[in-house]
Length: 436
Image (cartoon, rainbow, N blue to C red; front, side, top):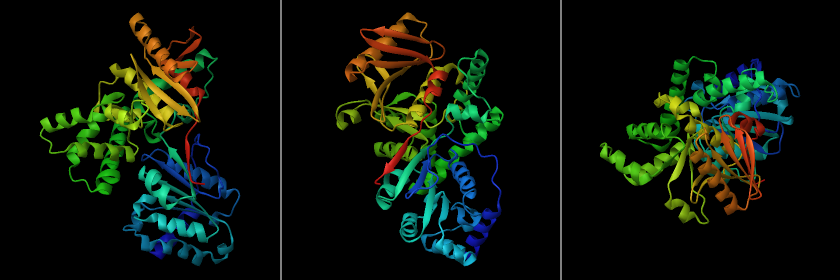
């Protein structure tokens, strides 16, 4: 295994890196912590690593900056016992580097069971900066939180935000220019349907659909079925289809259980709970609870489901053009989720789509594709005002397709904003720091 590691490391040291688009993540180039990048497959974690490697090569000799992908087929089957060969093989090639600062980038670290023992040991004993990526939320919530306590800063990585999508397309948005706004609107229509996975952006629709389908197959079989030893993959795939065709809707586990059971699937309610948890672990789906003052009350109510990327919806749902409101709402969710994990929906007399806390600031947001109908307008504004009263907020937002207006009602400010403007206002991302 040592010789294989040496070949892979040497090949990468000699490799030129080109065509990497910078992302909007404030990830430090050098840190005393292990930097962890977590997110759904193909969301751009490796590209972020390559961008950092390119920057480090300008400061350090190439031989000091190492990259390894644990999913490389040349390493299969890779075990914890093999990992000592990684740096032993490197220092055999470059013995003078023992006294120098080394940067190690490890892609898809979750492939090796108990990987954290190795990472923790080399972090504690060597002069080394470590970057790791993984495709399972377990890395964030379980393994990193326990095994790397006090050693890591974690960043959640998502497919392109709309501002990153425009940058990929070579568009520099100018909201004061009619021509620029027209181009932005054109690209937004594609972003809403096709999503923000980089590999699909410039592909024809059928090819993009096939790529996304392959991504989902990897998630289902590699990140979920293999990891959790699931044999009933038919049920898992059926659950996928249900969820991605019903994004931005309420999900009742009891109703779903009864529906699947009537279709002949053998399952328990725990099966549905577990499979949904696995899909969330893999960052494919998210569930949003109702806001209540206690956890039990939250758990008694249905949750809303959202996809990590709008593109997943079109894998199963061909009639998506008539469902713009759900596409809008899912894009708003993913934009908020990049900035915070504290997202709820609120229900009083009316339902409000999002109550979110971002860096200690509370926000309430409704999403309404069109507000032309007087009854719709009254319902959206009235529900938002009710939520603003409940949370004691002076301002709320309604995201629409085109309408732009600011209303002042009972000393409260209601900002009605087109989606493209709202998305470009704050392209920030969430960093979750673990026990510094």
